[in-house]
Amino acid sequence: MRQKVVIKVVSMSDHKTRKKALKTVVSCFGVDSIALQGESKDKIEVIGEGMDAVTITKSLRKNVGHAEIVNLGPVD
Image (cartoon, rainbow, N blue to C red; front, side, top):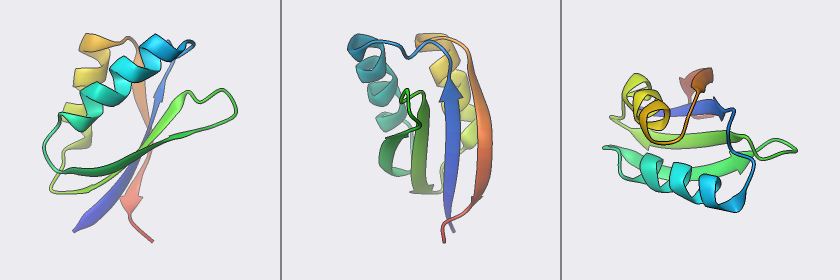
């Protein structure tokens, strides 16, 4: 089942940090596509099948900084 996860990363203020966060998310299992959201581009929308939102969030916390799940649900 395909699902959509929106994760807010507090420390994504510059291009280098955004690139590192996107690279971290892409390396996780089951991720099909990612996109930046929000006015300050501090949210990452991840769409995939068979992915684990908690694992992605833990990877972001380890490599980038504080991250929290904002929304989790099926793809419309």
